[in-house]
Image (cartoon, rainbow over all chains, first blue to last red; front, side, top):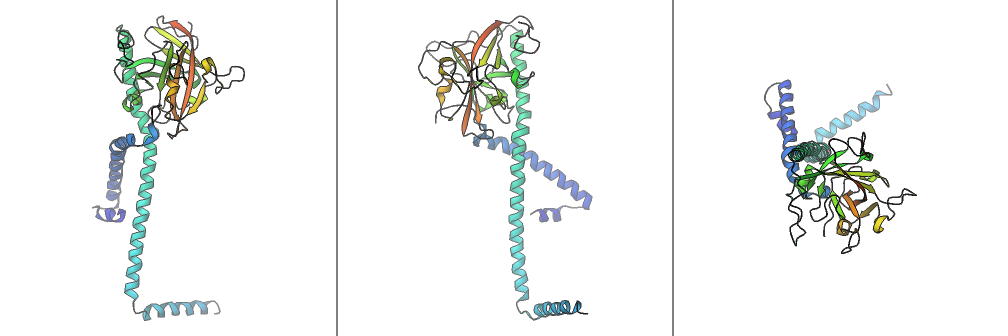
Length: 53
Length: 279
């Protein structure tokens, strides 16, 4: 998959590296600010209260 | 001479093997496919590992940034209300015949100071223990008493991430102060336990220990008399709950403290339990 992406990025090596950085930043931002905040309430890590079973 | 001879023989054998092998192309093709699949699995595993690491970064760091922003906002709103003479705890306490509080969820109600956890340890306690409220700060269980009242003022807080107000709750020792600031009063609570040995797990007032680890379903720890549902309270207690052990939700750590004194607020003067305190 990564080889395929790398092959399809246009331009020379420096240009490809730059695009890779932008892609990694975009995917990280999507995970940190959209996917994880949505996912987290479904996971048990945040339970700090006592409540009935 | 003697060194090169075996190598030549091996090379010859290898070359002859490839040249004479009838299904050579098919064999190479098959190993390519295996390599392709293995590389795919490897990349998927590495990707999964990076995503899990990123989730750890999110939990330990990013949630704290968001929670801090919310805490700052809720604190400034509460202080504005106090400055305008408005106290969210007064005038809308408990509806007649109901244990339901009418303070809106997410509203800041009081400030909490714990000197043992740092001279700058200060959190605004909000009303409610739902997920959104607990991201703003430690949350007051709405069915429990208010600061200073006889009974139990119970507060839940995150242990890891989301502002992590109760990260070091386990470091509290017997007699340590938890100071609650309302618009009108400083309430000084002290952690229960055996003063002589300093063991917080030993029962103090009303048979209530200073620190205990319980199951998440053990709601009796926030009762007016903790551990004794239905009993009539005579003491003013504060109870703090968080998850235990760190990073998990298997159990709850509970810290109980009893009101030792209440001081009416006087301008900007701090109580003696805090650094620079005079009253």
